[in-house]
Image 1 (spheres, rainbow, N blue to C red):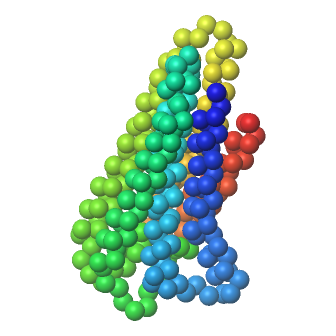
Image 2 (image 1 turned 180 degrees about the vertical axis):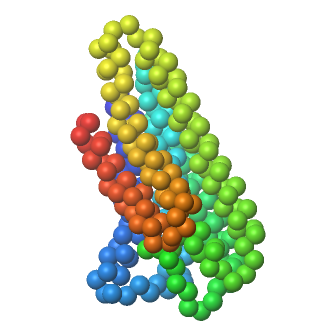
Image 3 (image 1 turned 60 degrees about the vertical axis):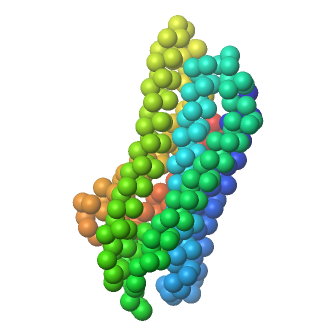
Length: 240
């Protein structure tokens, strides 16, 4: 019964490792060498990998919410619904969609022209900062960013909220308090990770809007680029 959950956890762990590896090693090298320089090709590559694994995290959390929904709302059919073939297809779809999104954003950024020497007010090559520093027209980039981010953030979040609304409704129908606790404990870890992921992301957005300070925005970004992926395995290991 736990095989689908562990399969999804393996992919989430891999995504978290790659997500932090796209930014943290370069940041540590910059601190060690006291140099903040990065080549244009390296900057594009860092941005692409960051977007790839960040969006992949988002999609995997949505699939895991569906897994918990099936486990609690349809327990007798769980092994039939969450079969290895469906799990593999869902994870493959997550990887393909994330790769296409990352490729799209990189291609749109590559069409922009930049001045020879630029200073990015961040500790990594963040997409919005790159677009804002461009010397050419960024209208198409703005449309792609807001449309894609709205779609890729809104649809998974809606799926997670719908899954948990059904889960709460099913848990309330359980007569015994022990049964309710047991059912809720199966999704407590995932709910904690989802709250941490979206909470830190929302916090970074609100801090950047409220302060308009690049330094405070960069500090807040450490929460969802470093702290959140670090805490995910801790949360799941404690629960397991």
